Length: 115
Image (cartoon, rainbow, N blue to C red; front, top):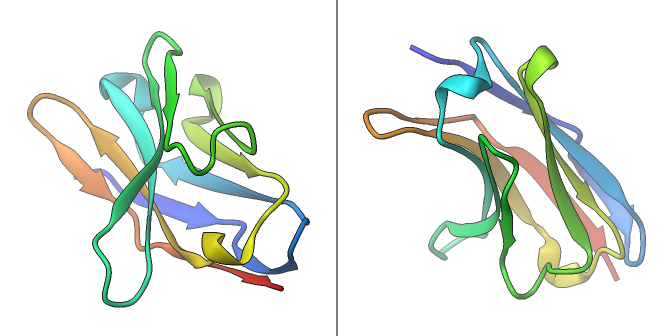
């Protein structure tokens, strides 16, 4: 069983920045992809950003150019740098670790952007 622990959420004004961290209890190199998702009340969880073991990245259209996902394999940590935040970025952000056989989620961290 893998534990994923997110941190770095909080309250920020529109236009501000936050950096989320996701620490894993085992090597993140074991997973084909590490991702960040977000969810607002009553909505489906949506994919925000993904990074693969070889460093390829992909972003949701609404965050491209503002968010950056990165991984530090030595620290078993994945980051999400969020710049120029908007009110619509307000959500609970979840870390996900995915491989062919396993799929793990963190408990989430709240990000609130005030306009």
